[in-house]
Length: 387
Ligand code: NAD
Ligand code: ZN
Ligand code: ZN
Image (cartoon, rainbow, N blue to C red; front, side, top):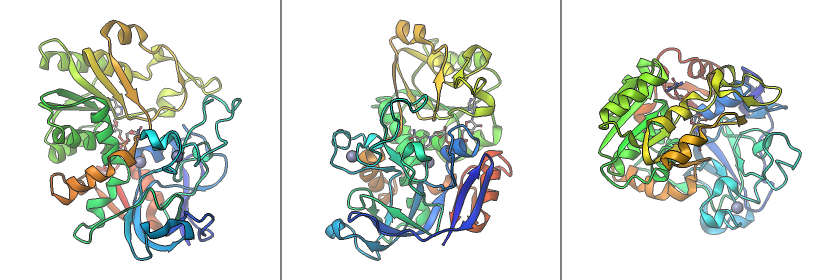
């Protein structure tokens, strides 16, 4: 089959690779009909999260069930059209039972060894997201093996197009998690940093949860324009940290936002100043977005970190955290926890998701898709690939 393979930093190619096979009774094989490139894929592409061997990328995919293992039971049958949440989770372990599928103990039993580098705790697994996250091939491919297929995949009604449903795999539940972690109940002032697809999904989710006012911040005007058009938000163009914080304070009677959502993450060129030690020196400029969130949030407020970070970070603003009594949450979003609620919102027409898409490309042009999404060319906001 054809698949998008990561070969090295900024080197991804569509290659012919072996077709996936059922390896465990709970597996299914999905024929991928639509798959997207995510800001998280860019961390691998940029070299921020290392991947030592070639790997098929992609964790946002949907398609048709081609084959099911004997252990999948009646949960899924050949011909079903499904979306697959991006964490690979067993559904039965300690963490899965606590709605933490991104930390499943069974999908990635022996990764993050005690001497395994900067990440020293055992972690979960994701589709197509490096050996650190389980070493599973991803879904930017014609076919993909889906473990625990009786737990993750959700059948999608025929009334929805692929593009209406695809973002249930990751960015909609992720944006929603930022708002859920932020404890938005109604009337809050929400400031979202990063007007990429994740930030836009956080904004849509903020409205679904009854936010009073939603402001989005980005360094790129075209991303702000897209956010305004798709999520009806107010916008702030980031020129420098101080100006953004002052604008948010001015909009909130000097108090600051009730909730700040970090939807940017790290970039190695920008943030990894000392790669040998994998330590980021904040005073030299990073991770400045998280620090801005801590400054722009009000006392007693909530900060949600959706952006991916992959190293130790120096000079974390612990003083602000303590003095302001900030609640800080983050991590891989628990997609399984929210997917059914969010699927119902889509079915009921309460939210539109496909309006974030700017480019639709055949799988064969996936490398071009990475280039325009990574380099913010051609007003790119989200690329969907059609195998
Ligand atoms: P993206 O690259 O399209 O969007 C990031 C946006 O941040 C861009 O529009 C960029 O211009 C903006 N930005 C850069 N510097 C900024 C600054 N100083 N202030 C404000 N904005 C700034 O990526 P995306 O797909 O929207 O993903 C965003 C982040 O979310 C990534 O780090 C990704 O890895 C992460 N993510 C996390 C999860 C999760 O489960 N937690 C899931 C999906 C994605
Ligand atoms: Zn993603
Ligand atoms: Zn589990």
